[in-house]
Image (cartoon, rainbow, N blue to C red):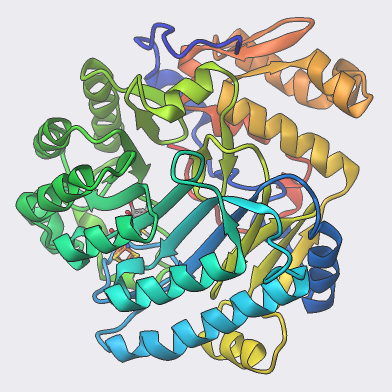
Length: 471
Ligand SMILES: C[S@@+](CC[C@H](N)C(=O)[O-])C[C@H]1O[C@@H](n2cnc3c(N)ncnc32)[C@H](O)[C@@H]1O
Ligand code: SF4
């Protein structure tokens, strides 16, 4: 049992003074080391060797497939996507994806006579995965199921990101038929003024329809993405969106802080900065949203995520069995992850491997029978230790020093003397409780978990990059 219970009083979660004091740019730690540490010294050959080395390991596998296309562009979007109305573009992309799947499975030696490691996790992300037609979705998942051995519905987390504007009842039925059992859908905000300013017009009815269809088809868990900090948002307008969402009652809610980085994401330049809520209004929206979601019975899981008390994420957290990967929080143990498609990142055999971000370069490599890897990172023993520390902090809101001492043969207080010295200020501010044998994040520190994790990041000062603000 975890030392931190999610039933702890959350009333102190939002502490304006502390947020103001500690709010600075920082990574989201969906990986450690984070992507800016990846380098081009790692390529296709390293990937092939690693795949061969791990082919017969016993731990399960996780698969990620990136579908970059979107029919329209939402101006706020910071995802890796290609906006196009030409659905025909999915045809060659799917062909290349299938070739990449074959390339990986061939290298692993999986196929007839060798079922290979069991896949317990599949995630289709984007962009908009339902940009693919129902037939194309069948082809893609059929290909994956032909080359990999999937755990059954009760033992696998098979998720897909849905844009409700691009998904009808037939599509939901097909998704369930091919095995998806988790769904995440983008909403952001239902206010018409906000929707117009971000070029994402999406009705409540449309959204509710997809949600009801997903429930009727027995999806195990449904998530809705919301965002605060968008143009024209205020506590009053967002309150109405929250009312609707609470009425819809999804199993999980992600409440993202809008990361406005127009120098990195071109479409964001179409957002008039004068329309953005002030930093104070933004914090008021966050405070109000947290209080409202908690009052509605949701549990704060950590890093933007809320879930119902009976959702598997909440239960996993209470049992100390929560994990974090590129898709956010997960109940599946930290396992090797294979990525397919442009920009995707895998984590295999102790290393990160990222595919080309450019569609042409990706396609050219795969069509020539080469792995489309353009950069990566092989973790050192020290990286593994710090990765584990950051993962447990983000998932448990607590660290038990003895468990790291047993697993990594270190004396925690000596090894992390620098981090612990920095953390004394957090303790003095009431954000964490620091003991001789461990630390526990207090309610007021939970929204600042990134800042706490940052003290264990060995590379933070060496990275030249733009991270978004923590809150
Ligand atoms: C790939 S998108 C979701 C799937 C689908 N394309 C859709 O829009 O419905 C994943 C989520 O990232 C979040 N997101 C996108 N851009 C963001 C930004 N600039 N800052 C914070 N969150 C962002 C949104 O909440 C979005 O729903
Ligand atoms: S939020 Fe979703 S639909 Fe909108 S541009 Fe981004 S990936 Fe595409």
